[in-house]
Amino acid sequence: MIRVKLLNRTEMIINAELIEAIEAAPDTIITLTTGRKIISSDSVDEVVSRAVAYQTAIRQERQPQMNADER
Picture (cartoon, rainbow, N blue to C red):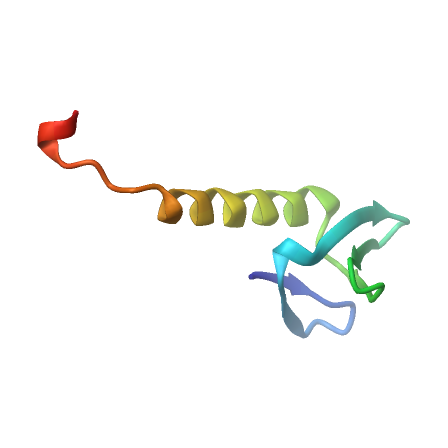
C-alpha cells in the first residue's frame, strides 16, 4: 500500500499492486487495474518511487532469511 495526496489535500492509501498506469497531464492520473482513476497532486516520479519501494519491501519480506552458517 502507498500513500498519495489528492487534489483536495487529503491523503488516500492505494494498493500499489493494482496500479496499471501513471500519467502526467498536468496532474498525476493513476489508473488502477479495476478501471478506477485517481488524480493526485504528487508527481509521477514520487508515485513511481513509492510503488517501487513498496515492491522492494514486499520482495525482501518474502525471501527466506539466511542464518550465519548459510553465508
